[in-house]
Length: 74
Image (cartoon, rainbow, N blue to C red; front, side, top):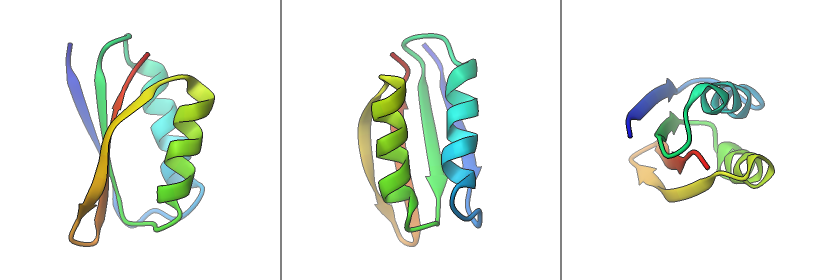
């Protein structure tokens, strides 16, 4: 199992969710995608994306002004 980090800081809705979806589609099951973004709407968009794809958010939180999601590919 591998961990991939994508830096989506500075991108505005809907780009963080679209890029996260693209990155998730390339991962094998069991791998982790770490998404780092600054758009406040990502706190809504990324969980909705994960519900659609059937993957799982292992952790989400803020580190300063950066929102970080750890998503396990299902």
